[in-house]
Image (cartoon, rainbow, N blue to C red; front, side, top):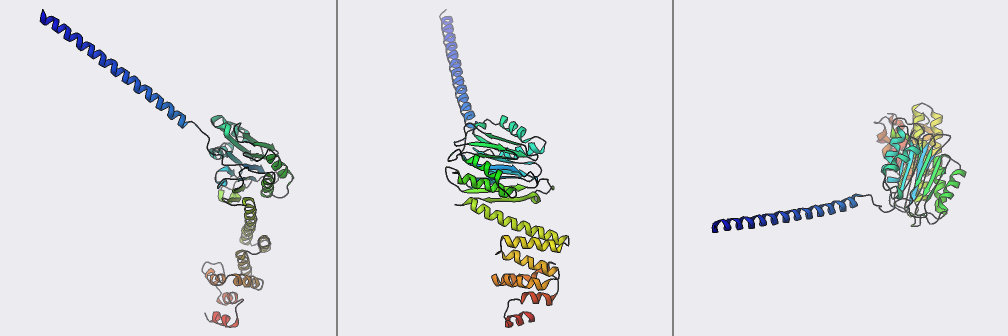
Amino acid sequence: MKRMLTFILTTTLASAALLAAVRTRKAEAQERDSQHQTRTHASDVEDAPRPLRPVHTFSIVARDAETGELGVAVQSHWFSVGSNVAWAEAGVGAVATQSFIDPSYGRNGLDLMRGGASAGDALKTLLARDEGRDVRQVAMIDSQGRVAAHTGAKCIEAAGDRVGKNYSVQANLMSNARVWPAMARAFESARGDLAERMLAALDAAQAAGGDIRGRQSAAIVVVKAVSTGKPWADRIFDLRVDDSAEPLKELRRLVRLQRAYNHMNAGDAAVERKDNEGALREYSAAEQLVPGNVEMIYWHAVALVNMNRTDEALPLFRRVFAADPNWRTLTPRLVKSGILPDDKKLIRRITSVGMDSGGARRRARE
């Protein structure tokens, strides 16, 4: 009987201990689950969209009604604004994405418009997917001139946009609310090509007060109305000023220089078509834009030689060689590449221009 009581007592104590252990492990498991849920919730909070610093300020997207060219231009008090804000594709559209920027609006917006969506539908689709839409500022224009813009409710004041015929202007973090209306008026009243009119809008924004933080960078992109299938050939302007005390002034200088090189390229194309007079008109137009550019003068002279108009070329060679003797050294090397005729007498005549008589004699013996 004693042994039986002992067995029952032992069994009872073991069962109690086992039950206590089970309860303890269950409590520990519940605590771990609670901690995991807390960590998961914290992770979800960390992964949720949160605003970054506002990178971009005032911009314009536009289409030229006569040529069909599309473009975007921007200025900001932020480094390298053009690397993320400005998107454009020939025959498709242009996008400006700014404020608390999401660059994917640029790529995805162009993809949607290329697929047939209007600017408005493309923007609406992307905003619906974006939990951070309240801090975004985005504008789009498609190849038909349809425009759409969005200024999120939480964009930093002064912020707003104005949509007009074939353009939209938008701004955030401005010194005042007069900036984007001034941009609209300037674009509508400006003359010239699309690049010139968009630059006028940027100048007007700055004159009206501009970014409350100041200024640092600017950019402009202009593409053709119809794609050639060669993106590198479709960009008429693709210029950036990444860091400057006067970004708009520097951007205008670069636009002027690009215009000159566009004329040079057009001149080269005319030469290939054997349109010599057309080529010379283009080369002259380039030199008028940047009269001190010796490279343009040099290749103009080379083109004249290839047109059998060496007498007209020699004064140009003289100017170039006087500015930098290295061009004289370069000239004979063009023969092997087929850029100048394989005529030693002709090459000596060119390279001797502007030299004193002793130097000319030495050149003749070479």
